Amino acid sequence: MGDAQKLSPEEQIRTAREGFESGHDYTVAVEEEFAILDPETLGLLNRFEELQAGAEGTPLAEHLVGELIASEIEVRTGRCETFADAAAAMVERRRQLLELATRFDVVLGATGTHPWSPWQEQRIIDTPHYRRNDEILRYVVWRNNSFGLHVHVGIRGADRAIAVTDGLRTFLPHLLAYSGSSPFVDGVFTHLHSARTQIFTRMFPRCGIPDAFGDWGEYERYVRFLYDTGSITEHTQIWWSVRPHLDFPTVEIRICDGQPDLAEAQGLAALMYALAVRIARALDEGEPLPQHPHRLLEENLWRAIRHGLSGELIDLDTGAVRPARAELERLVEWTLPVAEEVGAAPYLAIPAVSAAERQISRYEAGESLADVYAQEVLEPVRV
Image 1 (cartoon, rainbow, N blue to C red):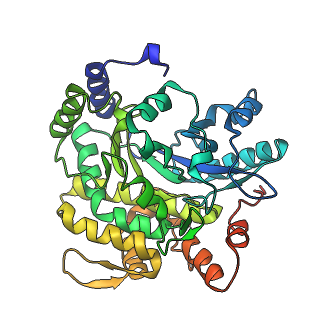
Image 2: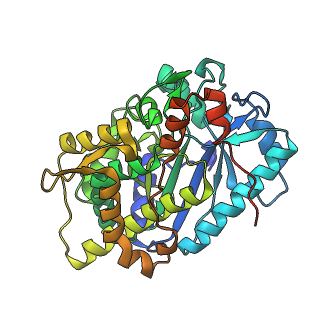
């Protein structure tokens, strides 16, 4: 939607609520962000506009968008009625994007951060949205050279969408632990599994794990407060790691690092989707859902940032500390009956080795950053 067509905040909030009330349950869309790389050096290249122009007139064009910097490109599945459709679209979007990249003699990366390219050399793309964010955030937005995977899940009912958003808060650290793919940034081995989260979530305002809002009315009051005080100029400046999206309407899960491996990306998206549906089902059936204070959720979030699947997570209901993989397996087991109903079960799998673990293992074995990163560059998709 262009700036001239933008709704006023009042209209945006009203139409968003109407959209949720008349929306459809359990549609799904996946967004993947990729780094544009020099094929020889694997450094970041500011060439998004060229690739975008090259996609014009092709089936990819409507699914390709810019995302902050000119060395980044995003592809979207578009709204899908089933997860199988979304998984197939992920394959097709990667195939289309890789064909485009080959035409322009670039390659693509999908770890949560680039291991060494300086943020000072990346150019913010020239759109009204990103110009505004640049003016508002300055260093914070300049520093955010990161690449993620987002999933949108259709949830019918405005209050229900807020309740699903609230329910997802507890499990955001689990999803991040699964997705960790960014142990390197600025030429440094950070010893984190998700340096991306530290750069983005810890620096941006209105980011990370949100408060629980309880119902649409409370969330609407919050959004109105932000507009009324001049804290935001558009609703997408609410960057929470899970949020009700006011345009579509969906619950958008935004916590995860990008995934170099296609099957792992599909598995992660399947878990994000199945988890949202499982929470909605629990709400519908009156099953109690955990609601823990932000200070406790932050403990698990830090564990996920630091150690990913190699570490431990806290069962906040009991205080027990368990291996992160065991906690993810319990989560998969909890979602599985619903995942089978909605077609996500065939894709559910906890990776034997996460993207962060792979990279760390190679680096600690003596490989250079360049050699480690080269193993995570996207491979051609064969269909």
